[in-house]
Length: 59
Image (cartoon, rainbow, N blue to C red; front, side, top):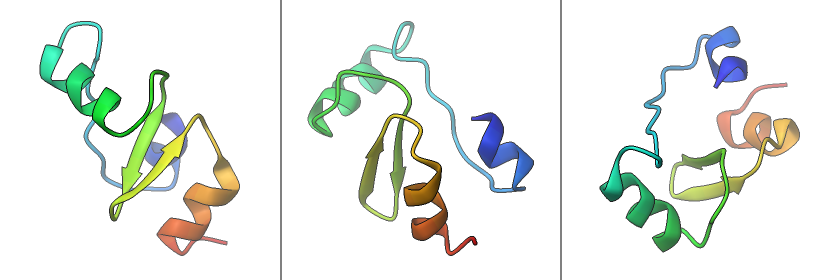
């Protein structure tokens, strides 16, 4: 995600269109849309800057 890159936060990006295991994990997280972000076992569906900042301790 561009936002995480801009903040200098390392992350792993997975393509659910080409990686069947990533798609299974997405569904297991209760999501069918992207982006879906997993931060310390917390799921963020869609781009929710405020929630991402909260989970990462950013202001």
